[in-house]
Image (cartoon, rainbow, N blue to C red; front, side, top):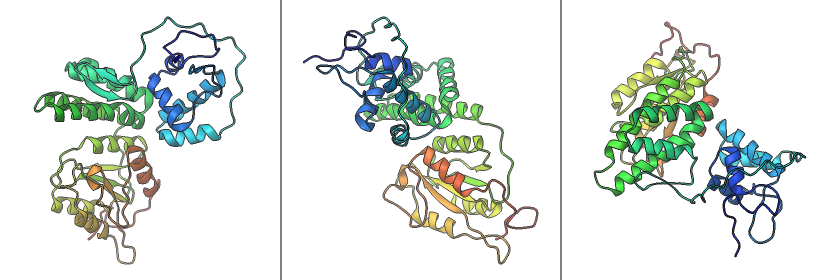
Length: 342
């Protein structure tokens, strides 16, 4: 059976999948996934199994890239693309074919057999730099990804897949690659701090408290959420890893936040009673008592849903949930120099 192979055989007209991927700056597997999963494939097919992309087909994929780069989830971006008016095909001659390249494998690998899967091309560079413990290259690649795609997309589609691949490698290799995970995490944390805007001044009634539950020390997902909220001018109080119960309660009472995000990486650390207790806390003057909206964040809360509390599925959803809860211009719900009173 004839199969599409790289960039050759243009007898059917239009661009091959490999040519489209290079034009968009994504992996060919990404183009094929958008076709298979979201129906964004070519309108017409040539004979056999060859697939050729017309200018209108490419325009739809360019729109898909533009939407996902702003943090729109791929499924939602595809729905928008499919419902928009189809772009008029350009009547310019096709661009000359670039020099042939070797066929791209369906699954990307880096360095020592690090399985990445169907990911952006940038993941491979980040993974190789981490495996080589190349600090200068890693910092440059992380900064470039954040600058090009924005924080939410860079985390979701470049940084997090690479971290997950390193974690899988560590789990399957005994004690090997622990240094790679620590090295990558430390540099990601530094990149987040450098790209984040200055700390946003508190606005009474609009502050967000972020903390790991007791016994939980995985702070990186909270760090990226804090940076993404700062980009959106949301005041954040970040308390980091394994905050004791008494300290968490004191922090909530002292700040009177609009929302509290509780991160749990493991089901053994996710505490439903703690989340319920924080959600029930009240402060402010009599007659105008307030409560914080509690968000249960992280995989540890899977299967431990707390009735009435939000559980965002990912970074983009968490950012949207917080923004919906935090007023842009909040009048102080209490007096006494902006402090909550218990």
